[in-house]
Length: 228
Image (tube, rainbow, N blue to C red; front, side):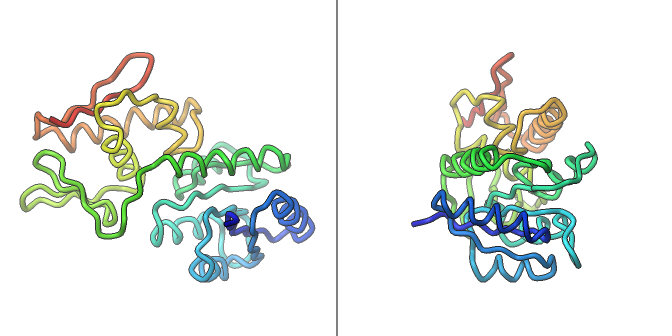
């Protein structure tokens, strides 16, 4: 079965080139050029991956990514944009993107990045809607992004949820820091590396009341999540 790509692009000439090139590589591509119609297309087509321009008419790619994340926390999103400032890239990842490519770009690089985010997603254990994880004294409701203990409920952000899911499903294993960065932010840049440090500290704080749970830092390598 072909991988279905939702592609949002208002530069019609560029869109035609990208769509046709991806189709020659075996992808199925559905394309939309009006930002206000992208979410409807997402719900109708249920794509395997989304490629979004940012400067779309009527609704920005940032807003679309945030809307998609409310419906689906896992589908990969790649921004493809002429907005190249650092703050644009940061906003892209904060909106829920897995990767960010600046225009102009090469089709070969785009295809490699698509394959990369899909490979990372494929390696993840699949959680069906409604699933929850019991870890120590906590109940982790992955689909609701809630960490529960007793009567206390903590609402997690999208990236906190993704980080804790990844740690749990690789528990007791050495987790390469780069794999975490690529999984959650789409690349292992210095900025994202510092972000990861912050998020690890947050997760440790959330779990601090249960000594049977521990995130161990392995210097120069990554982490190990211990669940006794």
